[in-house]
Length: 215
Image (cartoon, rainbow, N blue to C red):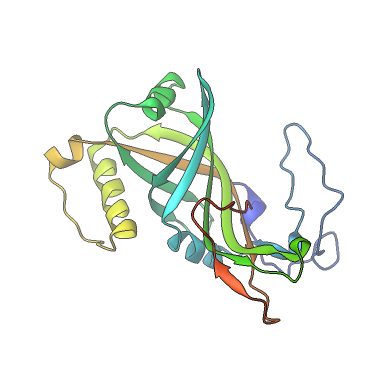
């Protein structure tokens, strides 16, 4: 896991306090560009765990022979608050474009993912003053199909714990084998929050189809 989400928001950077913005960041091949809005970055693992727990859908983007695509998914998860390691667990039918792409990549498909919560449109006095309150996580990882029966069962239990709030569901071997269980092992993630201002701005819940922020 990348160190992008480690440390504390008040940790010194380059011998000083965390800057509000990192406007000198540039994209460099083989490196990870840091978040420009440093004042909105969340690096505390406990806070990140809480954010993941409030997200119901993860969007996964990947590339296959047809080209780039993205798909929304329900998920369960393992998150280690000590190390920042994240694994997302997904289940699906035995066939489909996602699984074809994973198999074509020798069971190691590079992916990107994003999840978000607390999305509210902030109304401004003028059009240019409008904004969006949000909390989001964006990351990269590797998708792979899980063959081990015990791992598959655990993945389904984590799905039920997160999506249905039923942490103690038991699955028979036949039930476990009737679906495909796969996972995304995160290699890097960042978390970001833009809180609703306290100045009394009028806020309305985001309508379906509205744009969503990225970390």
